[in-house]
Amino acid sequence: MEETYQKALAHGAKAFIGPDTLALGKPPLLVKNAIVHSPNGEIIEFIEEVDFDRSRS
Image (cartoon, rainbow, N blue to C red; front, side, top):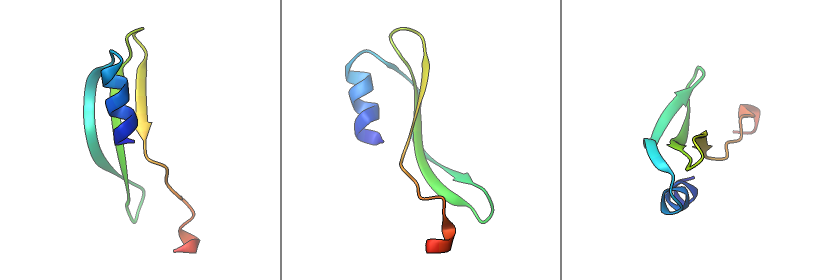
């Protein structure tokens, strides 16, 4: 996620929310994400790949 975020910035995207960790659900599942504004104006969220199936933990 962070590598792709940096590539987007290098290609003209503007940082909106820098790389951070957010908690999803209960008990919380920690996920890294970041958000940019693309050069064309789209809002793009980058989120790390997560295995949401907690039965495998």
